[in-house]
Length: 66
Image 1 (cartoon, rainbow, N blue to C red):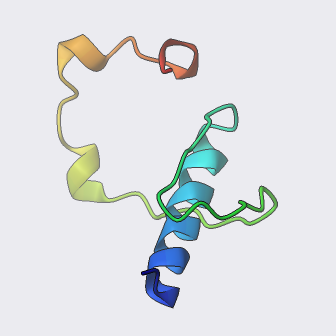
Image 2 (tube, one colour; image 1 turned 180 degrees about the vertical axis):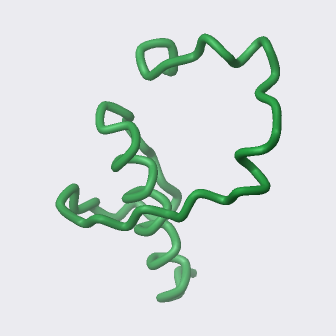
């Protein structure tokens, strides 16, 4: 059973990901159409940005994600 919150959160996450990675194909659990014109960027968390990216992930880009 889907709730309004489920659909809203998925829409927010999809919009945030697609605003940063426009070529990314996001498949969601709620299976609703995504409006690419929606601009729902999540803020950048200063604590997360302080963290070191593991070496094995440093060269990953959109083309390498399938």
